[in-house]
Image (cartoon, rainbow, N blue to C red; front, top):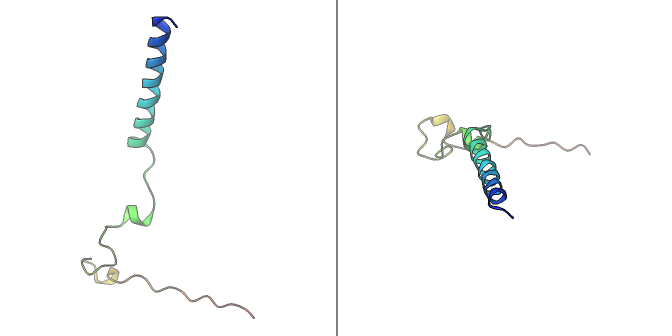
Length: 64
C-alpha cells in the first residue's frame, strides 16, 4: 500500500467519523416523554401540582 493509498484511507475514515458526529449533534431530536419532560416530573419536586402524581392507568374491560 502506497503512502497515497494510506492517506486516502485515513481521510475516508475521518470523513465517515465526522459525518456520524454531525448526524449525532444535528440529527432528529428524541421525541420520548423522558426527553420532553423535566426529570422531576411525577415527584414532589414538580412545580405543577397536576403533574406531581403519575396519571391513573385506564382499566381495560375484557369481553367474556
